[in-house]
Image (cartoon, rainbow, N blue to C red):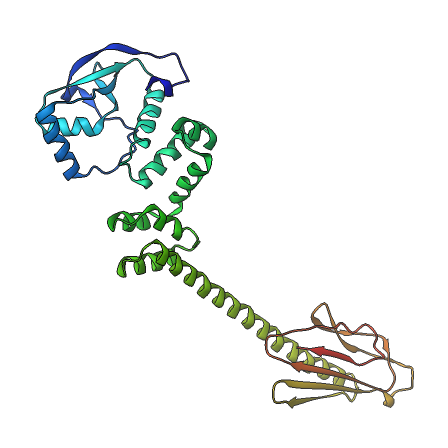
Length: 328
């Protein structure tokens, strides 16, 4: 175990000593949050019959007591078995390295839950200045494995509780991470629990949720387009009113077709001198209908505005002497 420590030159005392269980305090950096009672009872029965085969690891505390470095399950089981003292290896080790050893020792155990494992890895990185690469090297894992473990911590406390309560797997948890919204994750999680879905079916439920979200987003975009069309049509009417107020006998006509609505705007320029400049000219610029003052026109200018549902194709009118067709 000393091989994990590369920070300072610390060494174990080369003997096993009996330590009273009442003198041993738990390690505050213990990553394990749950201890299975049935498992502890089974271990206690084994200890009662065979004793503790692997000594606990402790370090001396400041007040003469001992702080546990590794072996909390064995210590708890020993207390259940009625032992008053346990064999321990005493290390001369700093508080920092004691914490790192406790984390590493527990992370490498197979029975640690994947959420506890992820939390322990996060502590190694956050509290002890390690990178993901450092943690991977110390734990003998690939850096990508460490990154995937840490991603599990994006799930909320409620989501983790449900996953652990119903014995869902780490793959179930990873499938949920494709959903950014907690409400969507909880919806899939409830479905997974209700119908006892395996990982593949849970992934399919996630895909379905993503599809529903895309449909909603598409509808919102279409709604915004329709709103813009209404603004455009209202602007046409306002433009005609502005020209009429200026004394121009302009008019507009709304024609209901089978699959679209057509608007026509007519500006009779012949009531003015040919080649004279009209006060204003209606056009579409960068998708926004505006009035351009001071454009020379002759004859009638007609604008066709056709509404085809959600499809919008815009054509900017740059030459006022030609009709502009704007397809909506």
